Image (cartoon, rainbow, N blue to C red):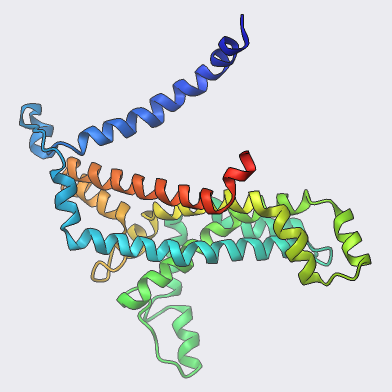
Length: 293
């Protein structure tokens, strides 16, 4: 048996899984987005019609789609850097020799990741309740009037960003902490002997060594944040005034509230293309090509 045939035999299980659970659904979604599949077609498949690119054309002329895309981009552009900074900062603190009770803090900071969104969102809504919330109670005693955190269109999305960052940063923190612990201590010892400050050690040793890990964490975080759905669905239900409707939330409403499966598939495929483009840009400008070369 030659080496090429052996390689294909070993790869075939993984390729089969990818084909069934990734490629096939993507192609099915693309095909469905070219039809007017709705409640009538669900009742009788003979009502299904091929409409070509009409669903895409109609979506691109809907203000709500552009609003949802803007909200999603706002969430990604603000949320991803905040999440990365929080993850890197806590990983550096936990990796420091001065840190005490590291297992306890690692567990406490990772706990929100494994807690269900619904349970945490209920507590979050009580904390930021306009009348009974602890946050507004403190603000009133500081002489600042209560803020309608989840009912004001200007505050609702920042609150969701804050919630998502707090909920998810622990996952990246564990990955970055593992990367920090893999950097040889000899490099820092040599830098200290040469008189390098802590900032110069971070800039010339830590950041370059963490580069590939930061790129991977960045791609995972961007991909995850583009799929914003659970947070606005549970906390604000897309409100107030549709200020927290994301692209995925719009897809859910079209598909499972109004049963416009063709339009929902078009939304999903547009989101897939946006995520693919964002990932390719990150890979290109993050130096991924050089890493694999």
